[in-house]
Image (cartoon, rainbow, N blue to C red; front, side):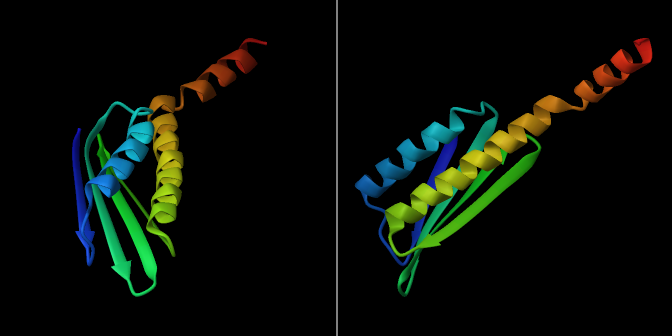
Amino acid sequence: MNLNITGHHLEVTPALREYVTTKLDRVIRHFDHVTATHVILSVQKLKQKAEVTVHVRGKDIYVENEHDDLYAAIDAMVDKLDRQVVKHKEKSADHGHNTMRGQDAESAS
């Protein structure tokens, strides 16, 4: 997986880079098909903003969050991303096979 972290109007310190990496590892562990991840951390007056784009096979998942504290914005962004990745994983694994099984059971009875 290719991870790119950039900062707009702030310097990405090694501690900040490590924090983002450990948080994203938890999410990426759910899904093996992640090819690239791009994180943008920015400061706009009093708001801290964290954005991430995760490139998976067949789709790009984009999540952003704003908060007064950058670490809180990263935490909330990762939680949103986790929900989106799980949702995408369930959709890609489903393929509608369960509906056909239900109809077969009804027609047999």
